Length: 317
View 1 (cartoon, rainbow, N blue to C red):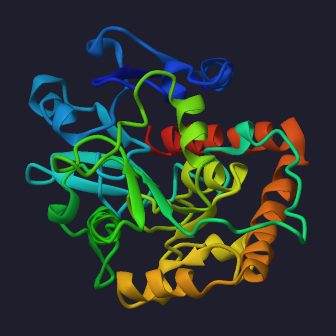
View 2 (view 1 turned 180 degrees about the horizontal axis):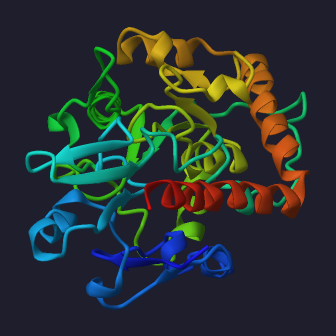
């Protein structure tokens, strides 16, 4: 098979196209896929955002292929695998979280960092505080626009911001993150060395509001896993996801089962220590079942992601 030459029309930091994990580019090269510096030498022009790609429609020769590849929920919101533009003259292909081409399973993103066995909570554990922590940027917050799919809004930024703000007003939720209205956020948890900083914050709490940015199949980032790793019971959003393929019911607190923030707050207020231990231990057991599979699972998951890229490029050339 001849080489497939890619030109990056935008930044691909933290992606396989920038060798985010050692060996990514080597694997693509082994499958005759290379990155070139000159757009005229390329077969496929790739970007994480459509706005950086469309300018090449007219500026390049006919016959070029175009591909959006991104892990970011708002960089690309197409639900179809391809679409024609400019009177059908150009086709653009899409690989994003909504086309199910990026996160091959629920553990595609965080599996390599799950490399320890966590002890279960003992029966004499004391639930000494029911205050909730929320570590999240505000972005557009309660003004975040809807993202409609199959008649439902799957955007979670608006909803999680509303919950955090209402809980903060009654001193039930402490907020860490950037972009919040003045006086709301305690600090930006991403400042400095983010990993240890986040751990230090989570260590002070027993509950963590950790919604994703959007609710869709296989889109499960570090949020829920960091929460479990630091013994915070996750308050997550399970509807329109496949979270229950790996988590049992009555493990994480699923906000999609509540009608409003007050119902959630009342549920947590009434939660006994015994129920907390049961739920938390179920989450810990899921974490351990993944971490115990070690590096072989991590490598297998990465290969699935890379094979998606290889197969897509071969199909569009």
